[in-house]
Image (tube, rainbow over all chains, first blue to last red):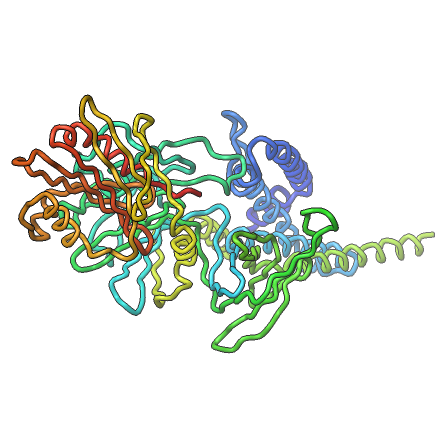
Length: 376
Length: 183
């Protein structure tokens, strides 16, 4: 126990370790910023910051996530010093500052694990109760048999990889993922494949060709090749394809049940609805460049609606959700608003931790200055 | 202190190792919100579809019913292809196939008989069924495709002699699968 405490104080919690870690973090930020130019924002974020290991060629190095976790453990070593040490008045400023920084790391951890962001697209006069992730996708099987409701079974993108099985007790068949492409093109088959009964639906006449990921990751068109197994019907068992934006979803009728398959952006449903009453935009005179735009909305919850205005620098906050006016679409005389939506449990942490850090540093400065005065 | 710190670290690692393999399940009421994008598309793109026709197909003047007509030359013979679109299912498979059969002086068939000989294909705007109707005595044949699209049905019909129809069958299937949204 004493050894563990010593290790935490003198080795793991050493300030030297923190200095090295912060330098390494700066290096990662520098190279990550440069890499964005070629790889795009999302892939760099995954590679340099969200993964545990960053590979520079064959060399494994800690990514920003791992570095910050070690920094957190390093800072917590401060609190392993004997109890009274960090409560002494002359050390109180440092203690508060440590607490502030650790709180910021906790907030970053919560944001990294639990935050969800995406966009909500609503036509004027229409309502929506979900937003869709910019980057992450999901494979959805919808049981549409019941006339009153639909049952959704969604498989998240991490489970969509070659030779993985997608199963649920509510599905009368198994799905084997034969391949999953981050970006692909549907290509019409040149040879006559109509006689090959094993290809069903869109796969009869089309195949998916994998293409390199776009620099702007959200422009990718993911696609999946999957096989339906053990449905008990040879007309249904077979190979299917599905790609995002497919005009006609794949449908199957199995044992009097009606199923629909979709590959779509990861969708988060809200416990309330937003109705777009009016979208307004102001242009710079003589140009097509928007100066400002705003959405007048109705927030409908439990049958009660209240009006609200979302402007470029005035987001709407409700529960843990924040809605920012991000963009708009004008097509066929229909105006559509695009609201960037974020659900972030760690939203408040940066504000609180920054105030705590300021108080800690101020306190420490006052103590140091008063000691200098006393000496002089 | 040491033990609790160890437990905290293990919990943190376990949270980080969640691989999201379990499916999420939820139930939603049938509602227009359920799929606004698809609904919007089906309304907006009601007539917005195109197709790829081979260069040697000759465009004919449209009659008021068809979207397009082609004359397809083959050796000394030729085939006529027409594309029409009607709202709803326009009577469905049974009524339409038997109508084409009657045009070739053939007896009507049951839906089971018709489906047994049909071929299913797919295009970017949906799956289609192809029906080959032959009157060997008259040496005439039809190759007809039914392609449901949004709230309407597209009919593609090729008529010629049996020999020409057999030769053009692959091209016809390719043509049907070339239908796509114009956007």
